[in-house]
Image (cartoon, rainbow, N blue to C red; front, top):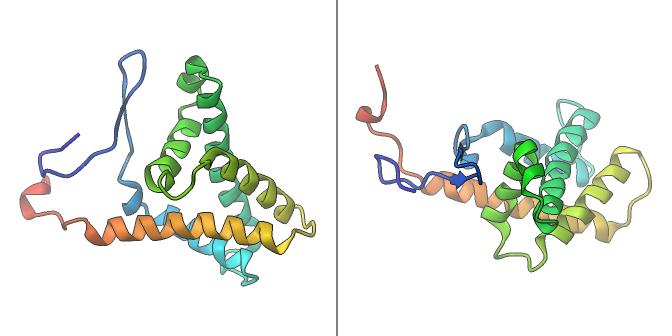
Length: 161
């Protein structure tokens, strides 16, 4: 859907007719980009400024919600999707930016959730598992940053004074 400035606005219509919109474009969400960037650093063995546990918890929350959203869509359980909008929105985020990059995105999300859970618990995780999660997160971050850099800046008339 195009807004008044001819920009694409993510718009989803729920079965009851409710319209779901992101609070802001995901590419403009600085917090999301920081969580992804810090999560990638943790997986590479670099300690983030806000603490490893906090970063892993936030990252695991994002991936777990997306995985749960994928499960809901695979089960075609729309009533659960209505009750669990955050999970559906997180899955939509990954689909929007990574559906062309991965043939089986739900499986990649499930693997990432398992790997991040093991990393958070302090278990030994294989280098290949960490590399795959890192690839998923890096591709999402790059897509968000690419969209952000290509989005035109708002004009003065876009602001409400």
